[in-house]
Amino acid sequence: MYFLLSQLSLMDMMLVSTVVPKMAAHYLTGRNSISPAGCGLQIFFFLTLGGGECFLLAAMSYDRYVAICHPLRYPVLMSWQICLRMILGSWFLGAADGLMQAAATLTFSYCSSHEIDHFFCEAPSLVRLACADPSVFESAMYICCVLMLLVPISLILISYSLILTAVLQMHSNEA
Image (cartoon, rainbow, N blue to C red; front, top):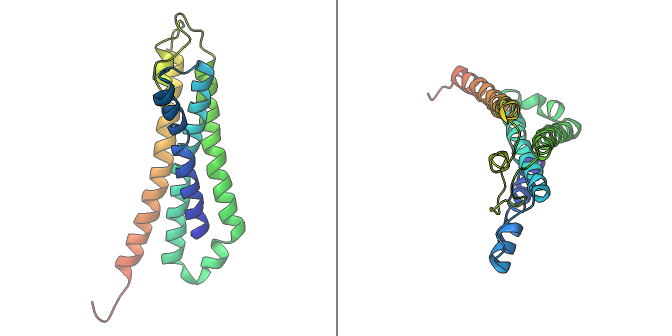
């Protein structure tokens, strides 16, 4: 549990550091733009950490399920190796999402300016600058974003509904 929490706090700190340095540089220098390459890098790190957090929260909900519903088997079901695999899986799935979306946004050809007038870069700001038809990209982004939200939320809801079911089935003399 504490190992998972430490990874969650590490991801949170790193997530903040993807935007704040560029924002501080913008305020100090007065230059309010970012290159498409810098934008792609920022998209990669932001989505890697954000997606990794979603999957890590799903792993943490499984950890709570095992701790509440199977307390005697907890050391076996949540060993260090399993925790490490869950963490590496979270990082890998987040990185896959970040790499896919950053690569997709960087393959566009841009008609006008190659500078984006933001300190926080998102894919829609790059799509507006693109010359090509972004409909395929938008469909892929939609599917990717829905999967990155629905899979972790489904796992979290399943874990907590199993916890609720187990708690409601417990009988107590005082209740």
